[in-house]
Image (spheres, rainbow, N blue to C red):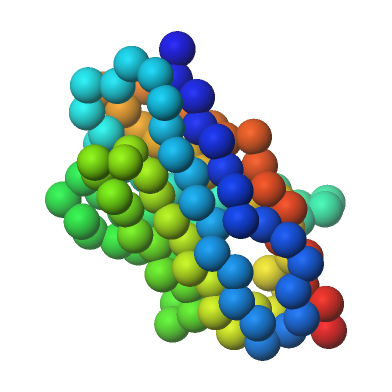
Length: 116
């Protein structure tokens, strides 16, 4: 069984920064892609950023230039560096791993709250 454990959420003032981490444990042969999603109250879950095994990245337009996704394959960990945070970034953030050709796993979610 694969588990994803997230950390790094919290409360920050607008303009501040946070770094989220998500580490995988369990039986994984290969990691195909990693991503971060978020869900604000009353809204659908949306992709924030993703990174493939080859290192290609993509970002939601709303976070381009402010957020950076990175990974450490040896640690089976994905990070999301969030700078210049805005109140509209407030949401529960979830990490997602696609492993072994298609199995998908989600983290438990971590709250990010940005005050104005």
